[in-house]
Length: 164
Image 1 (cartoon, rainbow, N blue to C red):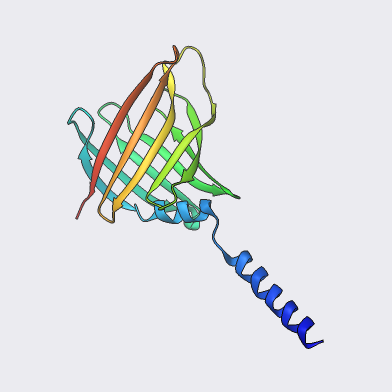
Image 2: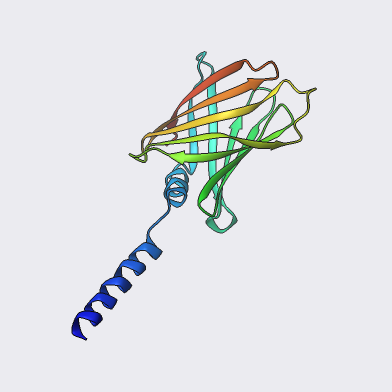
């Protein structure tokens, strides 16, 4: 009987530990939320870039705003069960959704195209890939990939430093 009690106690501890363990999507989202604040840096061609991140909706979403020359672009990040999703509200007029996956070291979150709303053949294309690399608390990079309608790709990398 004592052996049974010990075994049951051990199982309960294991179940409690599994129930409280963070999923990869929760870890990724927590890491992204550390970006809250204002960032400045340069794009691939040396052009100045301003990006701001804000935790919103009771901590359940993260908003990123890239301040552009013509138009600002907004991306919303949020967990969805065991997935981390991102919706990018693009200057092209569509809204691609991407699913994120964290690297084993937790420093890189890669988003891949899932689907899109308002995507038409009349538009030039859509964002299809994003890699966010957390270098340290005050430095991160964003590597964006735009898929043209002909299948070709355009790449842009932002190297960003936290504003003081």
